[in-house]
Image (cartoon, rainbow, N blue to C red; front, side, top):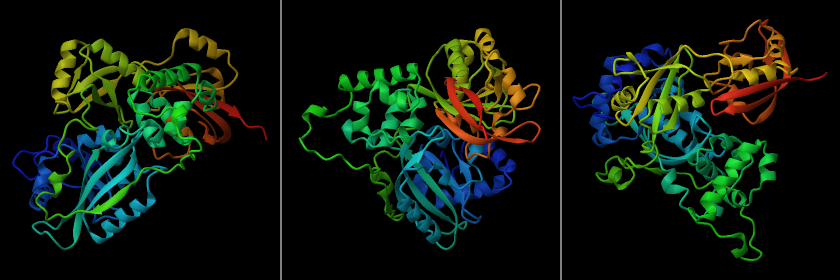
Length: 471
């Protein structure tokens, strides 16, 4: 969290305070936040030295909303701060999060108790991760007991320690998804998780199985190649099916153990006893990737990882694939001033400013349209087809889509306005790989129930096809 309560202020404090001012649910002034820093240092001086993800929630307000998140939280969860301020942290939970442990956390909050928690959480891209965190109560300024005004949570992604060191056939479904993400197969995570593909099934999966899950030919080839490369070459431990004991019963699916334990705030060595606290090798600090945070106009920012490179051209190409189209790219300095990102020197300056943290980019002047041959082919298609970038904005729509959605032009239209409200900032990309029946709101305000199919043209470019439902 930086120097909490010391003379050196957290480098993110200015930007964070500006975010507080814009959030009507959690308005902390600079003075209130400075007092909070001092109180944290007074109650928990060892917290000042940690480099992990940090959240602070206001217990004085209904539902204990988040009022502070550091850059490390963005890197760990891929959620931009703008998305989470003012919300309860339950948005990190998912279908396999242990509800009993969640209830214990809620009880500790109600009682104002510290807690050490290990829980399965989910990033913004639906990739699960093992999150261990210390939840500590913050009392009234100058006191160490009484009414709890805030909670601070110091978090760490311990997936590397907990999951993938086991034999592959003992991996849970979330751990299979962690492996997919590690192999840059994030497009497969949602469908694998929905199908509860565990380690044993992963080792036996076939092209036909992947086709049944809705994967295209190229996607299936990438998944199968990764399985061959990692498991046939012995990069992960597993027991071949031919060596398993005869009559061995199939293991019932259960998520790995998630737990809560009491935390003794008076112990001098409790915090240091957890070896992973303060280390840079785990979770959020990845030496082979850089964390990117992109903003465009008033759209919700997006956070993702890109492989490290010294080539500006390579970085821009990767960025285009990730966001779904070409933008003019600038990097932001400490004062939020924008500077063009064009050359290797520009990139080096930007990375130096990021200082192994988050590289903040501002995107402008989006390029509309898709490849001419693809546009020509889609112009003849009778079904409405729309291409949507990672910000949820229309890149291209064929004539049938303009007619169906009752608009003359869909360029720069926000696609998420068609669908019911979503907990995620871009509803369209949450539907990738699915055919879903949804009520679609058209430009004239009419609502049409139809089948919506969403696929990926590239990592950040979704293809949406609408099919009418006959009465």
